[in-house]
Image 1 (tube, helix red, strand yellow):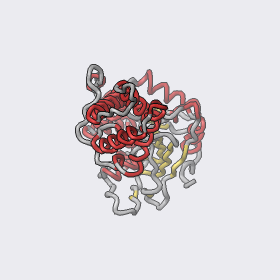
Image 2 (tube, rainbow, N blue to C red; image 1 turned 45 degrees about the horizontal axis):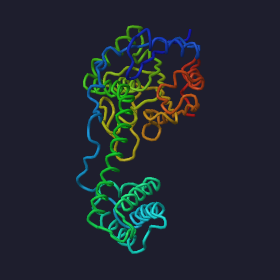
Image 3 (cartoon, helix red, strand yellow; image 1 turned 30 degrees about the horizontal axis):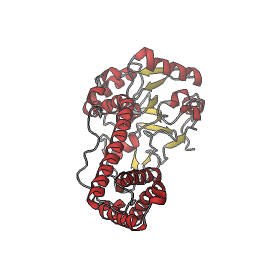
Image 4 (tube, rainbow, N blue to C red; image 1 turned 180 degrees about the vertical axis):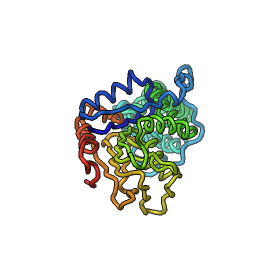
Length: 363
């Protein structure tokens, strides 16, 4: 009889049967392994209207800059090139009306104004800079007379330079602000669930761990004599590793984590229990309560970290880091793609399937 695999979900899961249960059932069918979901999502973060705390740029003036940034965009070759592109745009619009003496005076005004400008020095797009030059040319033409551009008024021109600078800044800030608001409105709700569950777990670790420990030990496994097989996604992998390395550990024979942050968490926030903090670049030694560890990661999963570089099992073997191939149809956010990957299902079957040595050898 094949031992059941206990499956821990990650952050953001709500609904034992509707969501998480379906994922586990699908993976069980794909692997041919009996699986038991261990649900803790009801102990996670409170569901809230996070949209209500996202700043909005509607009905607000776009440009609020007062102090130029202290960077290299205001002088040197970059500034010279930007000014050249403004002048080229201006000359292209002036055409035959471009009196050489007036153009030189205009260029001198632009060069003198550039270090004081708030927005123009940060613009590198040649099309935008050329349009600024064309706008300045239109202003010059509007103030010209039959004598052409010979009656150049530096004070008036400088005021228009200032207005162009503010217009560019307001446009840029409004556009970027709108993009920022749109992206945050789309991404923050999902991110809030993940971050919220991480924060709740860090504060109430014992409560969530006890839920997981009780569900597994109720099946008569998880002790030194009856170590268990565990499959854990994302924050579930953090929970599983914390339990396996606890002073009163959950004994795990074979562990498969996927999309897990635990390798990072112990680096930056030592987890305690049987584990000492990292010392320099030496690997942290994992206790005997963790028999074998396979850590799966996907190339475009930003929340997955590798383990073999900084950890070693009690018998000297390294954990196995296994890459799950990326498929184009998954797009660029792949943190949950493992559940539907045939390659990942094959990895799970090879590690947690029947056989005394499955998952024990480093590969």
